Length: 440
Image (cartoon, rainbow, N blue to C red; front, side, top):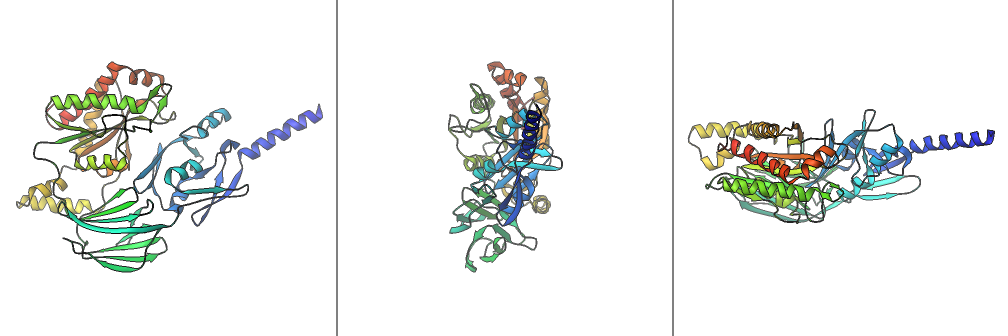
């Protein structure tokens, strides 16, 4: 009996040790620590130091954490680490694992994150390593498009461009030879590359004082210099509805229900109803294909109103709809907005200036209308900010709405019901029509 009790005690102690086990992790050139919550063999790492070590974009609020690399955005729902071992196992071994809040730290799944961002992951019994291979410049192209200089840098992997404190841009992780390349553009006069500790520093000669926008495509960074001519048609406002996912990407799933199918049904009906009201309306996809983030972003950039339709992707998300806005204003834009308004008063060129002089509360107003319309069908929406790539590049009123969660029984009953899907579509239609001045 004594031996049996000793054996049980030893097993319990080993279980605790396993649950608290750690390994040194080399992330890029930074030494961090990987942990194994619950001892289930799934490595996690503190999110913010990991993002800093690999040069990733980072954004966090109380409920979510988002990492960015070029056009890629990786979003995790933050869940308090449960005390129940079975509940913890369910979270860390899920197909799309959650981020865990442990005391004052937010932990993200290491191998899943590395794979999603295209990083190299390796490990042994004693240590782990994650790195992004050194990026190389494959091509540099310049053109004039829509009244702006467009500088496209093509690389062999995705990377981030970060504004340097004293001017210029850091291309994180890029290896390029030092030198100056002459550019004859409307604004740009030259491009200077300078190797440095974080990658390569890019100086855009002639861009000072002009609006500058950075956009990402797969393995490509684009710099747009100068005020853009208004790409929107004189035929009337353009409404773009974006049903999320598609193709091999199901989005959220529960049994036979899939996010990609439900949001497509809602988006199709909303588009049909808007067209009947006379609005120019485009779907980013009208079948079971995934057009990709870049193609979706191209439509977002042309839209007066942009609505991306999704469902919640994690069982940790509370039930009910959530409406997301873009989290940050473009750096330097408010100064140009003020200049644009002054030029408008003096008869400046309307098609260019109206794009930058739009009402600053346009997105808030559209958000309010969408929440009001959800309220009319008995739903209370939560509001959140997010630095999503799609919303970042949309100059009009742009929102992402998660209609609900397939993991919640009440939401699931609504989302799988044809009449309720129609109700969601009509919410979008009424909000858009009211925003554009044609609805009740």
